[in-house]
Length: 319
Image (cartoon, rainbow, N blue to C red; front, side, top):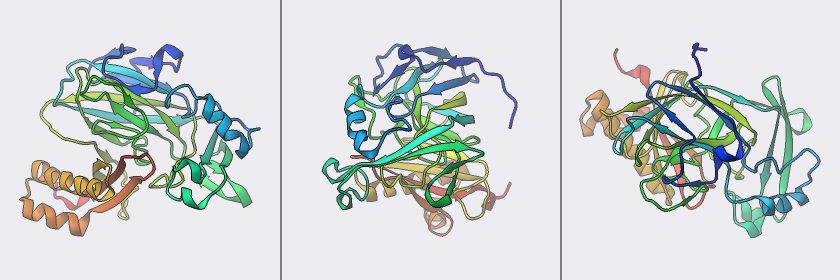
């Protein structure tokens, strides 16, 4: 792991946690480009799930939630202006020693297969030695990341924490682990970055509506890119763990209330990326996406918006 010094540490105290996207919030930290910020983040339900809880107790815990998902921030980044891109280099993510996964029943209409389950589901995880222990001796490898990481949207109104938006948010994208750099379009002055919703592990799609939910600490290095322009999130992974080639991978994202439109947006952004960064024609970029890019469904549960990404291996390009 690259050595670094943390410039700002943000504990997950009440004054540093909020539960809606709102560009009028007071920042908890003012950072400069190049600064490293460490965020302590609560779990998605603010500690309301414990080891003794049964599935029948989950709806009571849900009723106790005060507002939306708790996230830490916002952080203002000096020089971040609407139209810029905030580069968020994820340096390290540490999870707690416990976590939980739940799913909701038919009546709640949440999760991909909610119509097939009449009751609540819950599993409480013990997390140690790099795995989460499931039933029948099954061990799930851990690779922690923030389910929610985003910037304040341009409009002045408050916005729900549930669905993702153009500047990030609840994207539930499992590839945003240590080593990945996330690129978000800046919509509000100072960018206003917030992070939370820790996940110790998750499959693409977050099918039942839950990952291994856990508190995390995440360290990120922030930089403002004024010479780039993107409309939705993009990211670069160092080891290509989403690619069969296991090589560095660049990804563009599409977010929409229609899954096909999200897919189209992700692919169009990749075509534009290949034109801007690799100097390909639109014709050649379109062909290359078809023969070398992989589409990933990142989440299909944070209605009304779904997230899709297009991944292309970096090593196919000459130096």
